[in-house]
Image (tube, rainbow over all chains, first blue to last red; front, side, top):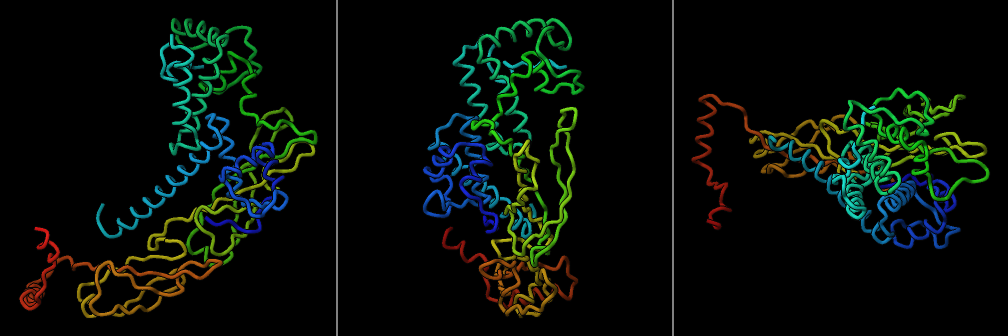
Length: 101
Length: 314
């Protein structure tokens, strides 16, 4: 999924918008759940999609009491499920143009 | 107000111990968490489960709840107990779960959803709003201006949360993809005190097209052709997103074969996508005697075994 480039957010903006401490965002980045652009936290840029994922990670961590490594795995698998569902919808649509279903 | 059976919601016996309640809660929380489940009702169900656990995990609350539950078993309906710190005033919504909770335990439950970072001294930032915008494929070909409406939460003079409708004109850039988000800074909920306004996120949803399917930046159209068009080749008129074109079908084409029409897909930053016409050979619905004769002749003339692949397997 692409993001519109102009919409990138800084590290402090992400903390403000997700309402979590810097340390939490560090942990999320450390696990590779999101990969901001830029080498140092001062230079970090986050896409809107990364903000969405960060918010999701924070909710899952808070509500399900899963540690960050578990969150990383969960988000990866949820992503995969979403992609498979999307692919399935697409193939169903394609198939219905060829055969009666 | 309807009585809510917290034990039933967690699926545990009324005499279940703390450990069993915790296990049941964790299982259901994972199942119904709105970020995990794709069930349309997941959020409401998740809230019920959290609400139930909130009470049953706390022995004082559980004891209080058990007493009310005993009484509720003997009478129709449920009346909140006297002296409970309701704080809600007259509430007209019937059967709302949060109301049931606060009728017993007061508004202390309100702290459940607050964030971990706490209040900032300069006020609170406004809420981010996410809204979906359905877009027709035709509208992704060039920059389009779209009007969108969404609801913003606002607190009126009486302290009630109301919803205010807001309308904006938004430029949707050419080549947007399904699921892409566009951020509009400061167009979300108003901040409290000196807090900045939240942002508006527009999530693009491509409306399924009756003719074209989307594969990345390429488009696919299913092109029905007659058997003789497949055999002899043909020139057909093909619809594209930007008007009709002439397409040549080569002789001896197969059903399922893809013909590429360069540059007639969706625009993108990297390169213009292509349009693929996928051939679908269709039979005429019925034939008269003369046509049947022609098929008969063809059958005798053509040395063709369509099931040749099977002979090796059997």
